Length: 76
Image (cartoon, rainbow, N blue to C red; front, side, top):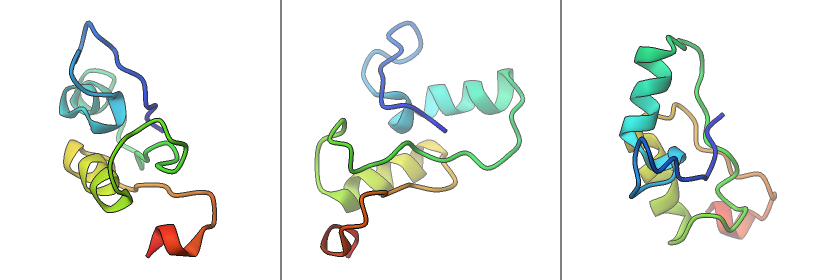
């Protein structure tokens, strides 16, 4: 699971969930080959609409974008 924190030494511009650099480090340098999921996109740590948050996580390399609060309107 990624975190919505900025690792400034790796990617000062994006939180780990949205950072291709961080995801590549997880995959290539650490060698993780399992399912990689974002942290909860609804926890208000990321800005923008939910669809954009999910798209950014997937584009960065997450396999699954989590939305955990159960609010159906937000998930639609």
